[in-house]
Image 1: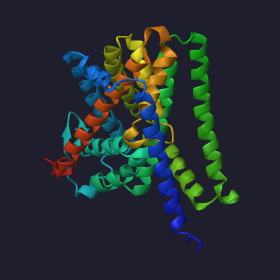
Image 2: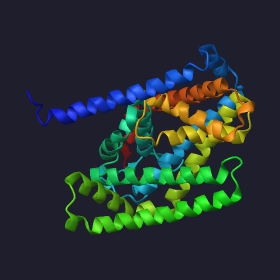
Image 3: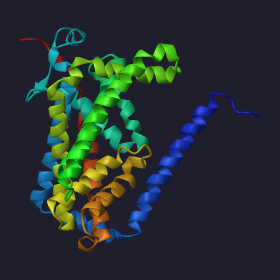
Image 4: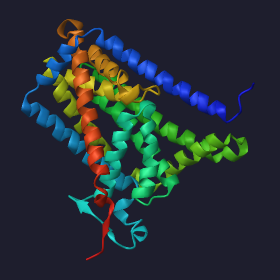
Length: 335
């Protein structure tokens, strides 16, 4: 009996999901085979209360930076969707719209919990239901923010990677800038010729969404880039602080490990809740920036697990608080 066409995508989806679990769990098992579990518990107790406080405060501040960027990227500061709220003004705190912060926290929790970045799919739904944004605009904004994230992470790596020669930094940044503008130009040309080339419907939709992200003036505002830089600089510094305290290495080595973990999230295949792939990224960052004689592999893996647990638990806790406070999304009438 042949499979029906509708059953083929379902089978592929299950196979993809099984592959992500296999890769993630396999990587985690391989890493744990190099470090006893008691070393992991010891790592959690190594940092001082001041280090833990600094890490948690940095993580909280990064959430606020993301919410601020969302307001700029989606034009929420311009009152474009006040009519959808019946003319009422959204609730704010410290200049941040609480409904935007709520979306960021719930989306961040979903991204951290689900494999293969499946949690990204929650953003268009959250933006449309909580912020009254059109679905197409939400998808375009998400694609733009992820492009910004990748560009800034790569730039931060080139600027601050320990021991990288200045010539390499300059060459890498030049290539990054040229590649960015070349990619934007290529995408513009592909969009212009999409009707003539008649690509598939999925390709056409992706091109349209990327092009919409390119032409939206809100996406190109300096504030959007500023909040993106601030978010990643703060989050990576918070992670570096914890990693360096656990491994007793320099802040630069800890920063490289934190960057390696975040770059690992770009890999298409992700384990459940990012376990395995994130730790491998942190370990790789340490290995590339620290002499093998000064850092035991077990300490690097234990530190990676401790950092991952910290970020994951904070993301889930913040997402749960946001989900349990729907009043953040309610509006008040103008004074």
